[in-house]
Length: 462
Image 1 (cartoon, helix red, strand yellow):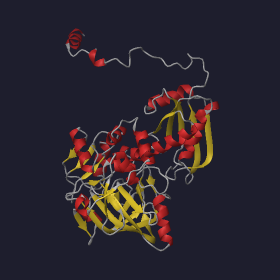
Image 2 (cartoon, helix red, strand yellow):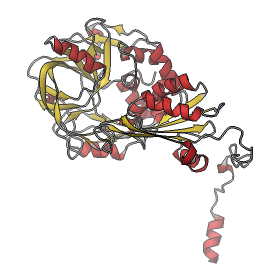
Image 3 (cartoon, helix red, strand yellow):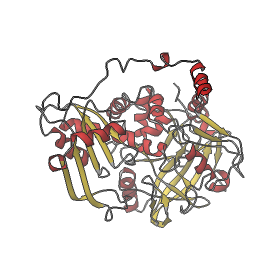
Image 4 (cartoon, one colour):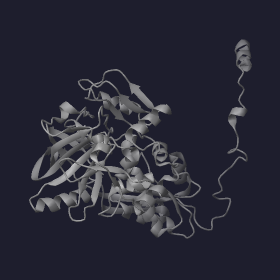
């Protein structure tokens, strides 16, 4: 399996020419983020010499849809169905002993100083400090014993403290239950896991589903996990680094601003605090960072949302063919859906279902199955030639949206759907796409001369 561990995936990227090794010394402040951003969507960046640190840094390990599909052992079109199947049929993990877990090769229980130990980057101009952006944040429900995995922005706010943005989802729910009892909540932050486990962490699931078990299902074999040293949490045994800690009850400290996925700053406010109790890591660990608002960040959030959206729409229109959360829409705000239309009005039903799927979704475009929804030129063409605002537009005002969308009023705004499907019973030639016979099968390279005589003759006679 190419993506069995973080390191086997890096080796695969290197073997296929998709890993840029940067041997020049780089600094944590802006430089790592700038170089990784320049390579965004092209190659992963491996920084071997980080100023003041022995530990290398990697970013961009999956920055295209094809990268994630390859890690999952499928293609971009089979990715959503495979992810959906894993979400509905999780597989238990395998608990291993400490001696079998590389992440236990080094254990630090005292004198923890995160910025001295780890090369945690400073990404954007107005960020409030150094941020861990690619840590799997794991907590456990003390009643059911099920774990929950997510990713949160983590600001280094002290030698052994992190400020954390907890949105009102599963982790926040478990934390509030503990806080109401005056108790802290155990947590672990896992840095440097295989891309399959990384993607599984973002699955949209009912409360009580362990995302590590979804990772097992995606892998087709149990994910090996090991118990932490100071907290009651199981973590991937082949991870690079694990920070163990507790979310403190009734403690809030300033966190932010921080550059977020919409390419704007999330504001400064009082946030929850994690007290770090231990650090474990592999010998010669590799630190992994995600550049916020880069392709890796957007796809990591978008692909699992597509799986959830596909299932929601299928309940309304079973003939849905594919869904796409576009990068231009931050992989959260814009949804494009293709369907095999059988009844008039289905396009508008899809719009309503998609908007109900997630409060983040702001604009929905519905097209017929002949439109490639991963090609935005095709989507724009469908809007241009199959849409009339008078009859095909749906607008809903006063809806809950993303508070990170600066155009909203504290998250409240308008949403819109465009039904770009061909009307049923249309005259056949009216919407018939032009076609050149043989075009799809033509190999253009067999027609292009490899010689230069024509060019030379042209130059001589001009």
